[in-house]
Length: 135
Image 1 (cartoon, rainbow, N blue to C red):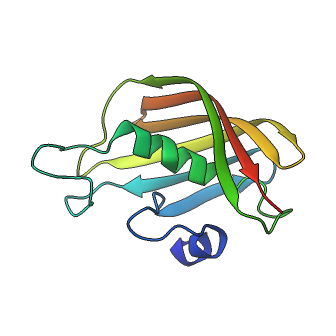
Image 2 (cartoon, rainbow, N blue to C red; image 1 turned 60 degrees about the horizontal axis):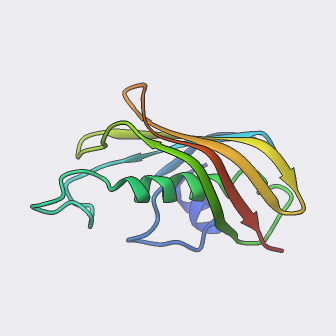
């Protein structure tokens, strides 16, 4: 799935689209993607040289909206978070690998676990990330 397809699913556009590419979807089970962090990102400034952790959480939530794309035409909304840990940073030049795994899916509420990593090292982990897919 490329950026054109991402734009078909998510209403987000620059500067708030936090995914560059979807690399793998197991419908109803998991989704993987990534974002390249560059010096041109709006959040990279003289005093902020990395991607803010909460924007990484937003990227995981955006990714979660792709788990059920075959069954839904609605929009995905981040509903709740629990068990969030921050263990590192993503700086310009890094490829931020994103993965979302479904734990439970009921009536449009998709509960999953999200992990964002750089060079194989998890930098943000969300034990419970609830995405609501509206119809």
